[in-house]
Length: 107
Figure 1 (cartoon, one colour):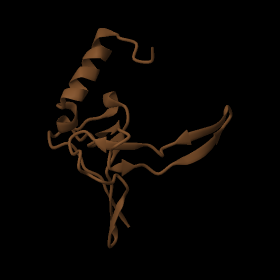
Figure 2 (figure 1 turned 120 degrees about the horizontal axis):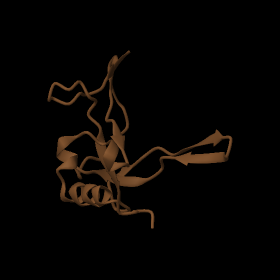
Figure 3 (figure 1 turned 90 degrees about the vertical axis):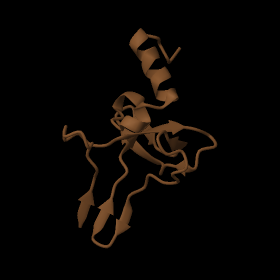
Figure 4 (figure 1 turned 45 degrees about the horizontal axis):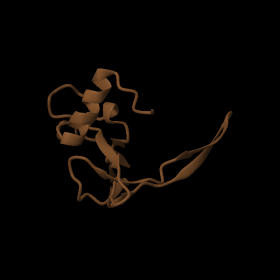
């Protein structure tokens, strides 16, 4: 089995990571599961959203093609994204500006 992940095309050898925006009307629903931690169960995934650079994309699940598995790496945290198209969206720019200003987004 070959695991296929994309790198940025800038020569940095960094992985291409898309920004998955939580959106109740988005076409993607991530797979949900619970993980047992010392602090109790922790729920992962199971959110609706869309990929910032490709809002019509309907899945981020691995795609199997013969002996190859194509991965769509993604994060719900804009600061973890490396996709230049995702980071160039107005939503990403606004959020990154707030982080740069030190705005507490949890408040």
